[in-house]
Image (cartoon, rainbow, N blue to C red):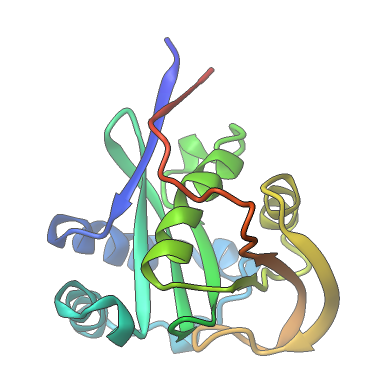
Length: 187
């Protein structure tokens, strides 16, 4: 059976799934993503942050989340923060379900997610700064058409420790079509 991959905007029912991902991931997994475990907020804070997104207009969002699904089952998400509406934002990639990781779905998920970020936030550029020691997102970003800019040391997000990251960039181009495509079948 071929899996059907799809994406959609965050819905209220997704909030518990995202919270569970952050609250139940083991320390080693979190460190592998460059997360400072001491900075992970409690459940109440997560719920407030994610719920706020649902009520904001695109030009007001401090964070914007797209849910990734396999056969209509939520399995992960991509979100952006550091949003400068009409200019740029920073993207993050998370597959919650360990059974879905390492199946080659990440590239298709990113390609399906880009129209939401570029169109709804009217972005000119999208950046991603994965931990340089985490090979999976770095490979996926290259396959998804992002341009490698540089490796550098920074604290890439409010949940992270200082680390070496790989900075990737995707620019909107007039000849690029970011129309939302239908579902993609993958083996």
